[in-house]
Image (cartoon, rainbow, N blue to C red; front, side):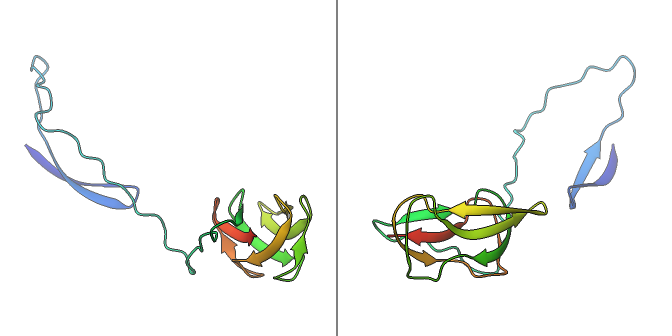
Length: 122
């Protein structure tokens, strides 16, 4: 039996490997393989949840908030540009999904992940 330390995706595992001859019979694994779950990366700021009755504006992709096109508390119309998100060196205009008053959950210069709440419209 030989013993090894193996690193996979930055995590080290201790394994034991048995050398078998050419005619050796390989037995099935006797214990289940347990997969580890990886906790999501912590962000610098907690992601707020849309208030009851509000419609969240979600980030379609990870990126950097370049500009907020309207002040917080402003009434916006459906399909009006509310902020600009830079992703993969492209500027993406994020539009309001509905009419209402906007409350931002991010600020200019914030880095966001895909699916993050950017704003809420109530």
